[in-house]
Image 1 (cartoon, one colour):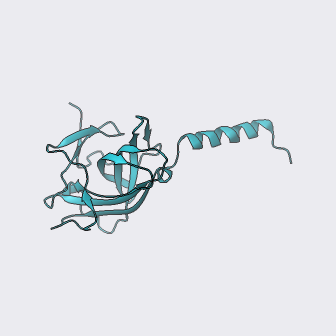
Image 2 (tube, helix red, strand yellow):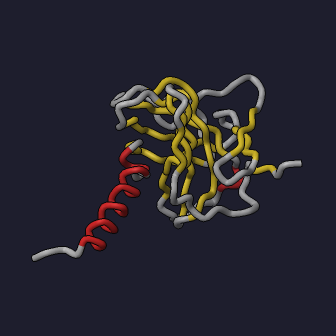
Image 3 (cartoon, one colour):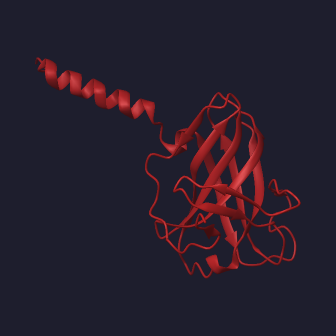
Length: 172
């Protein structure tokens, strides 16, 4: 059976495009994604607080909004993420989106040195307005990654986000 040359070229182009944008799961393997409204101590003793500077900090998320990170303290909610960089390159910044019912309800940023195949267990502060999530199955998906070599990746299929999402600030 002969494949027409045009169909073969289209198939190659589609495959090349798919290879150029790896699926999020091909970059970061998330094994735990657990939002908690309140904790009196780390929900899991093995989880360390994620990077958090002494002052609140902001970054521009992939949607173009300013997003503020909360401290992982009992006064705030927390998000525990257990993940592994499954690429061959060191990552230095990972922005995760917390999805409930398929919609983005919060974002967190992890900053550090995330080497290939090293398990990271971090806890992030979450705005309490994210709750209640009711019985929604929560998933944590990488939205944006910065590698040590300064190359970046942005999720080509950004989830639908609530315009009034807690933590978001409009540019002034």
